[in-house]
Length: 141
Image (cartoon, rainbow, N blue to C red; front, side):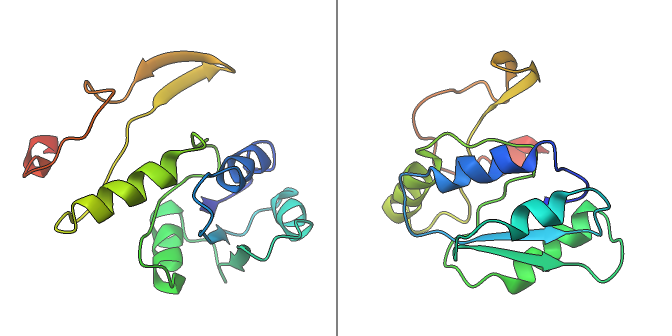
């Protein structure tokens, strides 16, 4: 989870990870030199599955995310931004899909964009349910 000055949102994002029905996860929070209370809030958490890393200089989201990828130890990597929320079964469903289709190179889910709390504006993708497996990555480009 790359972050920069997200004290207003980050605890909700972390809560959504902590509420996952899939129990075997680790959260790397990579702080990109926040000047608000972001680091203080994360440091106060007493959860050994959450690890705070800090960049040595301001890097931007892409390099900050890449720092997390370098440090990860897990078999699977899931991305979440510090202003995102996950459904409680997200990881469980994605891990099951990746185990069902071991040849898959990645797994993605849709989601909603919001402008106001609890008022979804739009869904990311046309397909809301089910599994689509195959060579569809090229269609994104």
